[in-house]
Length: 197
Image 1: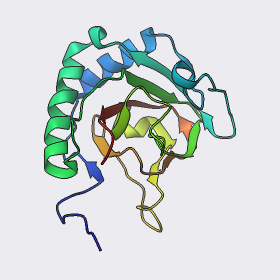
Image 2: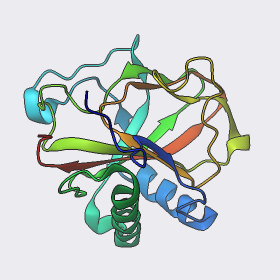
Image 3: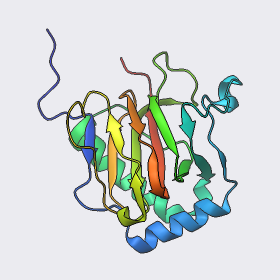
């Protein structure tokens, strides 16, 4: 029977925020200046079957081009290099998709899902590591907890500070619970690489 090495972890929370409050404000400002749209299920750019599904997801998103905020992308490259080396050790990890700016208004949620398709389709690359960084101050919203199906059975949800991030294997099932008050703003990023062997 094969076992994963004891040091390997598929869910990592940064000890300190990766972005300052000022940097979070700048990301929010840029995210709101891009075209904000209702988030769909599926990926029309690659398989032409994306759709709105309010029973699964109610979220507003925009995508931040690489040239709009290079310092943010430089920081993400720096952090993922360290996180991958120390915890995941996945081959060829690169940032090759635009970051997604996400807003969950009151009533917003995203039901159980994975960020990578089990057959490796529906994305421009094989997504291996996903990241969610909280851009809001936690006092600005209620609910909206990030949960993982295998991690949170009977355990407390992850509570991030402003600018703090959680990195996780893209094949982990996760959800964002319904926001019951306020507005939860986050940055979602996917890091890809060659197929798993």
